[in-house]
Image 1 (tube, one colour):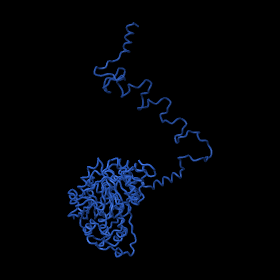
Image 2: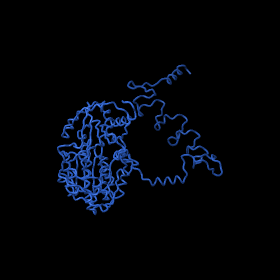
Image 3: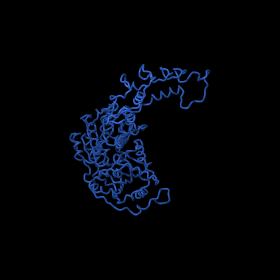
Length: 560
């Protein structure tokens, strides 16, 4: 072969096609920006299906897609090796012939009869709902208050002696059934609070009431006595259908719903009426099952969970004859009003409506006029907001002095219930942990704490097994625990109104309480707003020297 022809053949195999100037090779022989519809390199077949040109020699091209990739020797029917039975996983000859030999049980396996029993037990268990199921394992007593029909015996109102006093009204002055009077006597209530006297007078004759009263003045008992009285006198209107209550109380927080049902159970202990608390954060399926198990006379509910049950047709609100909107100003602040409107639109128009709020602002009264015709406005102590049974103290301190003063206060109030407030979850977490390190047994209440544990903490605090609780404003409303000796604002609240609700946890039901607030360089700016809101001047003082002394850990012999 001539030398020129050989050189020409070599040049054909060694040369590479040039890429356009605007494009560059990407390192894989392809040109960037060129898709499947671009130029194909020489040597690739133009005919056939996509990808055919890439099939190496020797691979089959016939048959369905993918067959050509099976190596020789493997069967097309499956991947099972030769000699293995189609009905099991063990190759033939693995187990020797002969009688079955009993041996030790293999861990993790169960005999057939045990499997059958397990399946039977599993079928009996209720299916757990995925909606709001964070409260799995919840004790039903946390929200379901079964009717108590204590024996009233031959008890009469004559056994409940309360002498008349000028300017004060007794429960005897109202036409209250003997069953409720017996429960009031058991609770030790003697005279009505101002909001109770004013509200009962209007509510018991069926009028709509818009009541203004600060927290801790007994407004819950005011509307519960009215509701229970009506239901005892109209037993024929009680609904036999489950989940069809006659009374609905809408409240902004879980704690308040639970407290309302507790009070209803205490006041109705001789009435045999059932109340149920409905709120989010607890097991949806368990609350739904409780609603369907029997007659419910009163429901206290947060708006969101109540709407969930309405949408699911779990609850029937068509027979409601008494609606109570508790803490209306709080629901306005928390953005619940649209939900409340949806609920109210589904209720009968022929009903009694009672609204209670810490403030009867123009916004609240506008809502009241929308939800009830001709409301009677009842205002108690409009000039003064803070409870006069509370000894309020404000200490001017630095942030570094707060913890020492708090520890000395805990020593002074040793054995009494103490509630400590901070503004943020992280603040309460750090403070509670620091107190534990110094030997103080305390519990935490915040929105981050599991609802089951929160309920347990409240029960233990109420019973006295827990003496110190560190909380955010989640415990500021709806928490009714008797004999809280001291409330501490470790951090002053951001809103003046929250100050009133915090200190209102002490000094309840006519008892004297104490509140101590720390005003440091970062938080004292709120004091003028608080003074304006409560209508009085706060006495700001420097703490005594003994409160500023170094702190000694409990069980230790040296000071920090």
